[in-house]
Image (tube, rainbow, N blue to C red; front, side):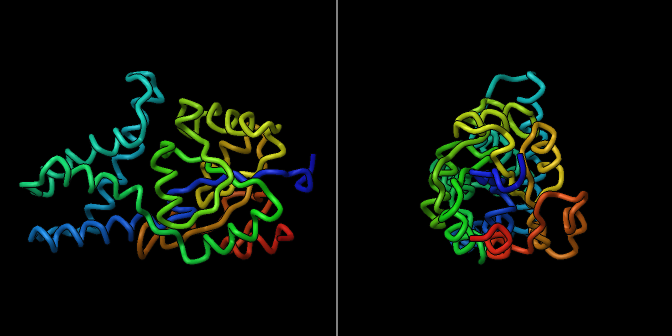
Length: 237
């Protein structure tokens, strides 16, 4: 099969479709203003994201049973509240802060690019985010997905092969008929290893200024685009 046989685009979401860092900082600043906390919310956002992979590794390794990302995020958040001396929050306020991940803002080109791509392709999430998180994020940001798939449906976290293969299977497609779209070379490498086509869309501001990781393609992916609007143009949408 060739790139012309691609029928569905499957998307990494955190960092590729949405700007998680700025969104978490925004949510933290709003909380800090209302409660009088003097917190470096950029460091807080980076620290929260820093616990993301280690938490999933516990599940990937089999050291703990399947646990959805909302619950992993909550466990990480409770550690950070003590680390950053954030005290006096009610359980409801902690839950609201944890659900900041449900309210992440899209990159400026995301909705326009996805809307164009959807005219030609099936669009599905292929994210480590759980279904409720992805649904709420889509409602918040106006993301026009055809299907919410990924880790919770597959019961495996990326980059485990089952996550990619189950997503293709749920769409009734062969892996080669799906294209993984991501801002992370490692995600694309894992997808490519099980047969998916690949599109690299760098997000050089994902981690703030001075980012050095994933600012350029590590390999000759099937498509390299500057943003989602450019991706749509390159795919004839």
